[in-house]
Length: 83
Image 1 (spheres, rainbow, N blue to C red):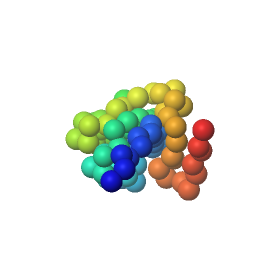
Image 2: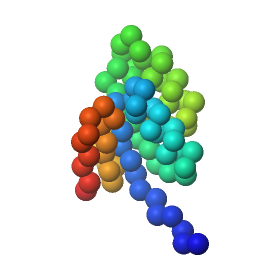
Image 3: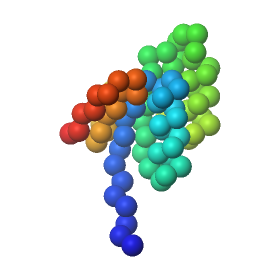
């Protein structure tokens, strides 16, 4: 069997959809997932968002870090940008 190629994924939005997607991809073997949510550190859901990140081993990072991803995905919309 051939080796799977890894890429860096940036998730913009880490609510129900983003965290579920990130968790599934992590479990499937994707190693580098960067996520950004504007409420991750300030807002009513900060603890929840940060907890999801810790539970799935994801990196909570600024939007600039997502910009270094090979593929960015806004978790709430059908929008993707490939470099």
